[in-house]
Length: 496
Ligand SMILES: *Cc1c(COP(=O)(O)O)cnc(C)c1O
Image (cartoon, rainbow, N blue to C red; front, side, top):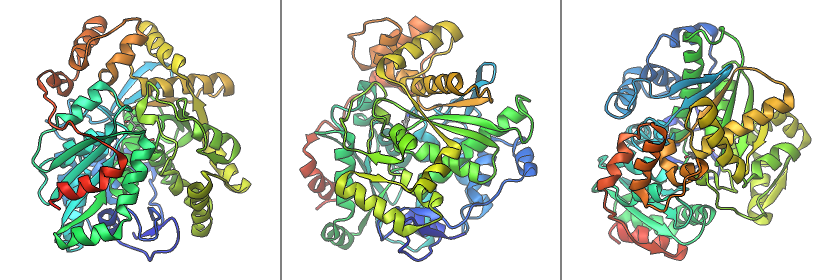
């Protein structure tokens, strides 16, 4: 299977090249030229397999040029014992009739980003080998909190790679910040940037398109690439956990083979929910995908009206990993639903850059609304949902998951749709202790690691080990820079 660009202007390329390049030369994103199909028989077979086998099989359907044994060695290394604190890397938890949570945060950094970023370094280094790339890859990451740590942990001390992470100084939680600034590894670097996530992400995109910089780096034996969710190597592992969730519900006899289910996904950059949509395109029985937004509800407006408009106030919320106004992966959805019209996508994206907004054709909007439903949860309801869920269902969730759960409840009340639904749980509640404690009616002035003990004592829920280890963590990277200084920080990191 080959890959093509969402902007239509770049010849078809192999999986390895798409992963190595990250972004297409015409500025578009790589998408598969067609989608493999799951038969009911495949699903039945996968239901008997381990997570690692399900992931290797699903990724293999997309990754020509990677053999099955190779992929299995990657998924074993990524999802095997020692990395995840559960034998099932993606854990289904039933909380009520027809309601399930898919816990994707049992990996080393306690957020769902590990599901992709534990395996992506293997995919990337193998891809570089396959295309004969001799230069060292420098991964640049703009993070709204969770990607940064997961990428640092995934790439640390991986031969042939270096990684530099930028995060918005006031846009991440204390725990997220400490997780990143205390990162170990010889090939890593971290800097805080004044501004919000979109500023940081835009500045990273500018660095990528700076030809003078890349020529200079190339002479010194480096090239820049991305681990953001625009990279196909980030997205393809995410399809697997939707398949796996369906298999688990089937194996536990919660659903019958072929029965449709709903997924409700707390959404920011649109990567996670796009993977669900791809699983749907492959024939996984899905009824609705509920796209849950926090106060930065640019996607709700988009799904409801067909107008994408980022000219609006930006809010820093208690679910910071969703504080995003430019959802990069939406471009891939638009490409599919406009029948692969690269010109249309290019004009939408040009309008987004020039005017900050675009309107999609009514025919495209209709197709979006056939499957996607929008959901919303404000700050107060996020905290109330955490409290209600803990009191009434004895289940502790984080702020992002709470946004999704509220969106699901509202959707059910509004539509009467009682289809079995899986809420995608994207972070451990201990990663957002301060907000979770506030939700439970506690005032907490303590710093990072002490909050973890407090939440654990209050709820009786044990904290994940990687977060407990933060008690001993000391910050290594303490610089805060202006976004104008990011380019020179990269050059300096690479010895320039
Ligand atoms: C990244 C993240 C999200 C948003 O996922 P997207 O793929 O960017 O839509 C939601 N919740 C948490 C905890 C995250 O880390």
